[in-house]
Length: 320
Image (cartoon, rainbow, N blue to C red; front, side):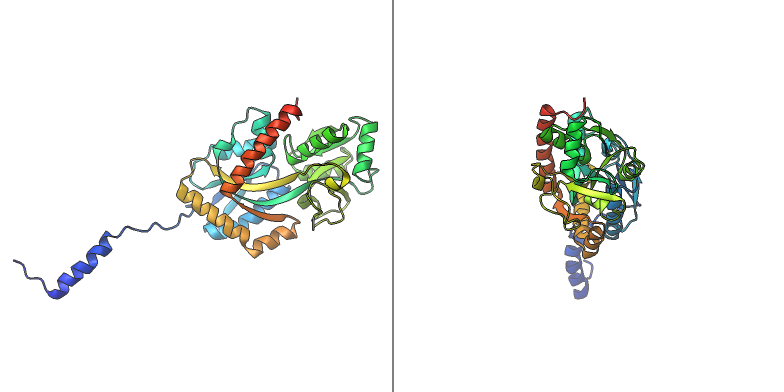
């Protein structure tokens, strides 16, 4: 029989439970820089939000975040790219509501809501109407009177088919009987260029796309439920008798097969970043309303919204 000292026996008894204890997994973190994909051109509202938020999110994830613009087809190009990416947390999309839910309604899209896991919504931005400050159109009632007198004689720009901009004009046409000639671009910068150049008479842009630099523009109305604190003098459509609301909302999604461990950490990181006072100040400096909505709640609301837009499509299709 081998000889064991009291010290050796006690050491073995103490060490055994420690060796048998399960290892605690460390929080997931990206292995390399993260891609944040945007479905609109650089310089527009979605792109600005992506670049602002990326700076705060990357501090939580411990890796740089590169914003990649893939404009086209009202963000279908970008969302399809992300839906087909590896589900490893390295590729995210910044969605834009309502096109996120309307694209699969209006066409045979290359993605559905089932293609994604929902990380979280981070902001809302009322959609509005802008004209040239020195132009003839004075306000929303004036715009509607002119359109009724000259059907399709006023050209209005949007950032894409099925976007908040476009659907806002669909609702105004439906409620008033006015008809506009609607043209679609890839984002706010080219819309502004065409307005100032006289190629269109009206732009559809959100509060956050107008108020940081309103030079040369007259903001005549928006789709918020109440006056915006960033543009308190601008009337809401509801106050003008047009009973609807319209917002641009932006949130983060990843491919549906993303593991729970990765999705959970991304949701935590987005909540941490969105709740940071520095992030809130950065959004507010761009006239953007920070609105954090956790992934599961946001997903439920988006699915309900898609049902509503499908009903609108059946009654008032916005493309032929």
